[in-house]
Length: 176
Length: 432
Ligand SMILES: Cc1cc2nc3c(=O)[nH]c(=O)nc-3n(C[C@H](O)[C@H](O)[C@H](O)COP(=O)(O)O)c2cc1C
Ligand code: SF4
Ligand code: FES
Image (tube, rainbow over all chains, first blue to last red):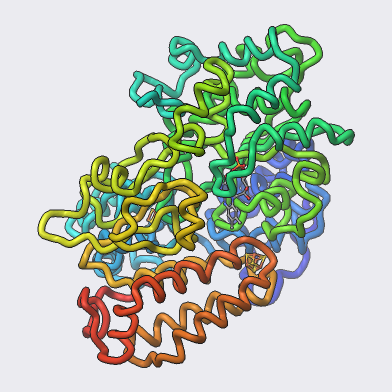
């Protein structure tokens, strides 16, 4: 079945999905089929999109709205409500570092500084090699591992500034 | 001390059905289905004085009875595993190490509430928990503990759907969680009507915290009196307390509900690191106002904490030593609530950034004594917030400013920070 909505204009300020990525929309459509029987599953639908594209492109929002029969505005509202969804392409490794009280007392600011220095970019930016970004986030429920961070969904902690080169080295070598 | 909810944590592969069964798992469910009516179960839980471990400490048996008595169907049970309160990781340990105990509790809750559908909702960041709970739900279905005709009782069915969040503290608030389950933005809803009558999809819903549900099977096996007697004084049962901050052992321990903060912090946490001075603690997560060393013999249970003007909260005890600045600590909590405010109502949306700005002024030497009065006024206006987040967000800041008044005044009057983290070129680093 053709996905006619992808012919629509991209919302202002957002890049359309590159031509090479478009076939994945068909994959997404297939993955959305079982969710049609599970009312309220827009979060799962958005995870599916994000896993395919590394972010939620505008075309995926349209497609999810169409397949799950909910307003596009509602899907967009959900994407922007939750911090784990991104409207911009994400690098393969998203490092979420906790900035809340326990981790702060255990040295989170120095850890964040060390990560920024080692990657050569401030938080929220993608490293020059295109593989990493550091997000500073709320408590991860890993306070026993203070200061803690997630590499995608993998738990790490305590991570001291001195541990940063090894941690990133392992990820660069694909051992993470 | 007899352990209830953490008793299987040390077992090999404790998260599997095989291990859980070896430890007597699902015997409580079988007993319930053979020997008890739904009413018997909610009465037993009422008699045990089990109250909600999510922080509100509402009587659990009563909640199940309310749901059962509402004629609307289908009724729902929901596991609230959105744990996101800073300083709290107790549910994570249960989900990773013993998911079946919570699932068994959930099935017992469904029976007592006459519910036939359920959701198991886990915060988006708990990757290992997702895997373990999904696998455990699959095992429970295969073993006939979930699905149609549970344990051969063709009048008892329960279909459970696994769900994850995607990063939002507010979704732990029960009505916000319902909106999230319905595929909407996770803003809270107005109460009343309460979840027991108008929960997910507008239907009667028993929503409980992981730790609350995990306690149910043991109560069925050992009786209401046994559970009641585990607590200290009027408090019933046990609580998982977890430690973090300036403490030697950041560990989680299950102890009688109502132990003193001294026992938790000094005996189990090992106190503050050597050479440092104990300066204070937060009894239960970001929402709780901090207490001073003079209050270390207070009981960590809801009533004593309320008398001290703070809350028991989640049992996430955060410890401070002399390297911690209490203005900075208040600032961290303010930043958290500013970030996590859902923005739906004005007192909280505008109030949380105000709290941040007041702390920043004081930390940067621009604060005045009027700022301390402003804090009180702001707190009073935030009590008009729509949900609990706004009601609690100002408490840690106001609590710090009143309990640690000298420290706030020293910052304002003398531009002096005893911990040495403010007024320095790069200080502690202002980590967003
Ligand atoms: C802002 C806010 C966040 C909350 N977060 C959680 C949470 O993460 N987990 C939880 O079990 N309860 C949380 N609660 C409490 C729930 O609204 C609800 O009381 C609880 O899930 C009921 O279960 P219980 O009776 O077993 O505690 C939160 C409440 C508020 C106001
Ligand atoms: S109090 Fe805060 S979190 Fe609650 S509804 Fe208002 S803005 Fe949202
Ligand atoms: S405070 Fe950092 S993980 Fe909880």
